Image (cartoon, rainbow, N blue to C red; front, side, top):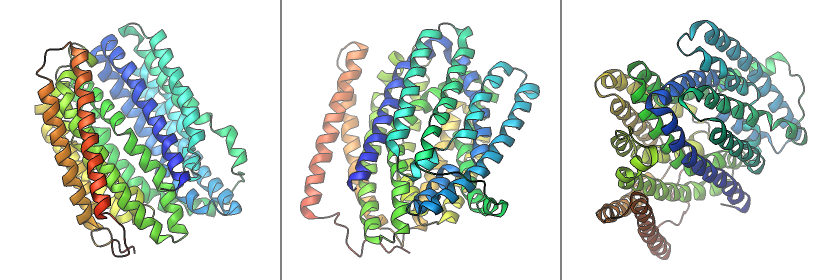
Amino acid sequence: MNSSTKKNFIYSSLYQVLVLVLPLITTPYVSRVFGAENLGVYSYTNTIAQYFVIFAMLGLNNYGNRAVAMARDDKEELNAVFSEIYTMQLVTGILSLLVYVVYAGFVAQDYKTYSLILTLYVLSAVFDINWLFFGLEKFKLTVTRNSIIKIGSVVAILVLVKTKDDLWIYTSIYAVSMLLSTIALWPYTRKEVKYHFPKVQDVLKHIKPNMVMFIPVVAVSIYKYMDKLMLGGFSKTETGYYENVEKIMTVALGFITAFGNVMLPRMSNMVARKDVAGVRQTIATSMRFVLGLSCALTFGMVAVAPEFVGPYFGKGFEPCITVMIALAPTMIFQSWANVIRTQYLIPFKHDNVYVGSVVFGALINFIINYLMIPKYGALGAVAGTIIAEASVAIIQTVAVRKELDVSLYFKQGISFLLFGFAMYALVRCVSGFQFSDFAKLAVEVVSGAVVYLILWGGYEMIVKKKQLFKVGGDCLNIK
């Protein structure tokens, strides 16, 4: 990675650290205040609002990011691309908002109050131009503003949320913070772009490629949000278990997400400049880093789950232990696919492979959820998610096997899996000692991390000495 990419990754990672720390403060607090059932209500209503946000944004988080990255070296082209894409977003955002207002006011009977409050969240999609600043690689700006708002929201939760009856306050804090985080970026657009009202045909030309990128967004939402909707219809308590575990998983994957956010515009710009050598080196290095990190997170979470859930979530959330252990392997599949998606498929516009794999994964997820959630609850949703994420990763890997050095990635992955097993074994040995709950968890985390880092560090020195991962001209055959 060059210096600017490293800085962007640092900014994005620092933000993910903040995202990691803040839920560590709020999640155990709100779990104890609301309980599993009320959290399930929040998860259910919020998931519905998220679908309206998805339809407002379409595929802009990827398409807009890529389009801006490819046009940013030409100021006039950049202004035109931003104006055309945002005009399209404005239309879809307003339409989605209007439909949601009708839903919240006339359809959402049981939880109307929470649905109406979440109108602010849906409104945030009208102003969301994070894709512009990501494409320009202005990560410092987005990270700073979002960090301030998130810290403020945590303070508000701790001060204002006191009883189960305060669920509407908790929902309001979330909705307002999401709206503020999107509006806060607008004053800085004047320094980067100039908006001019585009011709209709110039806006329309973005619809087809954006819709192509929208298909995988909808498909991903099926096995990211549909799980909770289907669980919500079955049991709000089971939804609360799944919601809490998924929240921890999302936090753990924050660094992988940050890395993908940084690399997508960088790789898109490299492709536009036809820097094939840079692409080759970056993909190989990225995969090794991502595999090392995801295996550490997966085995670490499985190892500490029995000691983590009770002290963290509180009484009544014991089923989260099994859910967490079962769901953890999805992090490896997601991380693997993240590199292929953000650094190869999307930058090189292999959208058909990306779309096809995710749609297949969504279909498999829906079928498994339908069959297993009524019988197994949250664990049924876990089964659907695991198989869906694995299917996506496998399909994308098979599709790029002739262009990328997949065998090298597997060799790297086996090593990190072995390191993960070693870390797991040590942590479970440590769990046998008699400590207080907090002390035991702390010793497990520290000892596991130290062992894994030592093994990873030694491995890096060995492979660098042998030059096993030197990227030569024959490593990739970029097309």
